[in-house]
Each structure stands twice: as structure tokens, then as C-alpha cells.
Amino acid sequence: MTADNKPIIIALDFPSAAPALELAERLDPDRCRLKVGKELFTRAGPAVVEQLQSKGFEVFLDLKFHDIPHTTAAACSAAAELGVWMVNVHASGGRRMMEAAREAIDAGRHRPLLIAVTVLTSMSADELTEIGLFTDPADQVMRLARLAHQSGLDGLVCSAQEAAKLRDEFGAGFKLVTPGVRPAGADSGDQRRIMTPEQALQAGASYLVIGRPITQATDPVAAFEHIQQQIAVSR
Ligand code: C5P
Image 1 (cartoon, rainbow, N blue to C red):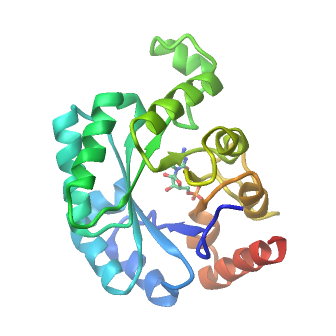
Image 2: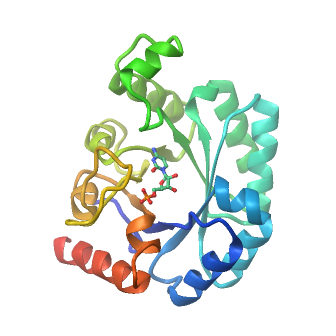
């Protein structure tokens, strides 16, 4: 088991700051972390990240940067200066881009964890072929995972199905952040290859990104507590 004592990252996929801050008000920063993604950040900007942090939360800024090395590095520096706990880039941006991101973060005063997305879990083999990648998605994940590891990144976003293999190859220190997790009996929504939180942690996940099973629940705090209890029992 490689998770720390706060393995759950709640995805605040809301269209404005108000519901995100309302939910944060009801949560305990000693028991979970929060993820701000493209929708909330594009609508509410750095201010919402600062407000969540001022409530004591560690924030994963999930903007999946993918650009020329100089621009990606500058974006990572900006995220670090915002004080976030974790930031991510697309591994398909290549070695030089990831190394530039690594250097930018290491040069700063505050050093968030820097992780990479390999292949978006929404991509099928046919869709990879359509963009000129004549390879099995699992092979492409491993290729990009190795490149991210060699480029000095701290870990990966990956599906829980990939976690065991990646944990074997990269060892205990490498962070594996897995979305697409669903508590037993929950609606899978548009997520496909899902695992329960306990299964994902047993497979080697360090952190679990959980959105709608908590944010769309009638009682989000009770939903969080229920998942937390399931994890505690399995540990
Ligand atoms: O609501 P749900 O639990 O499906 O939310 C999962 C979160 O993880 C969303 O914010 C989504 O953008 C993110 N994510 C994902 N699959 C990936 C990478 C990120 O679902 N491969």
C-alpha cells in the first residue's frame, strides 16, 4: 500500500465557484484533497484555488498542460506560485517538455508534485489509429509512462486497471493517481473500466480521484464518509 492517510481527491467539477466553495465548507481538509479542473478553473480562475487553499485544502490543479517546452514550463511555474499541491502535463508533449516542466518546478520556492497523463482513458484503439498511433493503447501507456519516469516526473494519472503493472515497474515512490473509481453499487456514469476504491488502492493507486459519486450525492459528506470507511476497513 502506497497511499498516504488522505488518499481521496474530490473532483470539484462545478460550473462556478459558489457550489465548489459550499462543498469545501462542509469537508475537512485533514481528511481529503480537492481537484480543480478545466471547467471550474476556466470559469472561476486562480481565485477559487486560492479560496480553497485558504480553507486549508491541498489542491490538485488538473489542467493537463501540453505545449512547447517554454510555455509548459512557464505554466508550471505559475501553478507552483499559486501554491497548489499537484499539477499535471500530457506525457505526449515529449521528453523536452516534461524536463522543462521539471526544471521550472524545481527552480521555485514551492514545489508541487508534477505528474503526467499518458493516454486519455476515453481513447479507444481505433481513435489512436485515427491520429496515426498504430499501437495498442496499453503499450502506448507504458511507452509514455517510461518517458515520464525518465524525465523525472513524480508520477502518473492512470486507470486503476493499469495501476498494478505501473506500480511493479516504477516502485513505491512513484505516485499513481487514478480517476474512474466508483464505490460498490454506484452509478458508473460515463466512466468505463471502473474499480472500487479498495480495489484501486490494492492495485497500487496512491490517490483516488472521485467526482460525481460524492459531488452529485444527495448528501456529499455522507458519501465521502462511506467511501472513507470502506477504505479504512480494507486496510
Ligand atoms: O465524476 P468522476 O468521478 O467520473 O470524475 C473523475 C474526474 O477525473 C473528472 O474530473 C475527470 O475529468 C477526471 N479524469 C478522468 N479520467 C481521466 C483523467 C481525468 O475521469 N483519464
